[in-house]
Image 1 (spheres, one colour):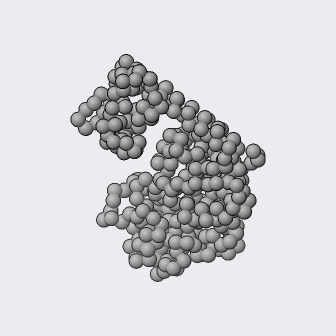
Image 2 (tube, rainbow, N blue to C red):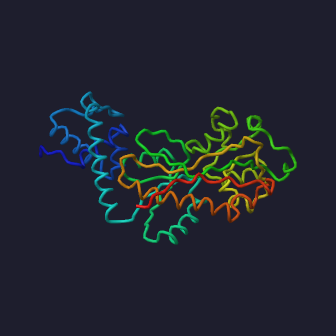
Length: 324
């Protein structure tokens, strides 16, 4: 048995500390559970101290394990940053995360702009919920993510890019009815995305509602399903502007703006403060802002919403960009 600590062992220990379960940690690390367990034992032997309290269902860190964990994660972050530095010098590949309430609407326009303006920029996209994207940024599996702000993680840089309003979607038969204020939606059957979506929390906040439990299955994993539920007369919902045209174009629904102050969200990019790819991210942020503006210029939400035609479109928050 070797007395040398390996990078692989440190990654296994980090995964085990996060999931507190050998099976789940092994799955994340793409190894068998016995192999992961053996590597942890070898790490403990090399360090001369026990890291893990092994229980029947869960594992816990020992006092030494708790002390060692921040240093292990610092080592892993430093290794990931070294890899990022090498990529910054030798490639234009970026691993970009997007949340599901942004990706289907922004991504096609963004990729067209990237192909035209920065053809050497190689973007690999990962769609997932905010919590998963932030975890993968911290772990070095993603470089940056396009999410709803704020995230409020001390280790991350947040760059606001643009803001967009939320609109009310209700059945066509209610098109002539006055638009209710946000707090009145609490008395209506408000259809929401399932838990885990930040848009759900933003909608609840506007409606001054606490998080309800599942109500007869009236939750959905996508805006498309929510709109179809509204069209079927099952309730009302909210959509961000960028999603309106795509999701309501073939549905018998009415889309209306709220009275001021209208609910909205700020969309931006986040990345590790220690990443050496900051200049690349700011370069990409300019293209994201351009894509959002292009969506509005091409029709965006205006194609279906019943807002006054002379209402000015909200302007994106334009970042100051320095070319690398």
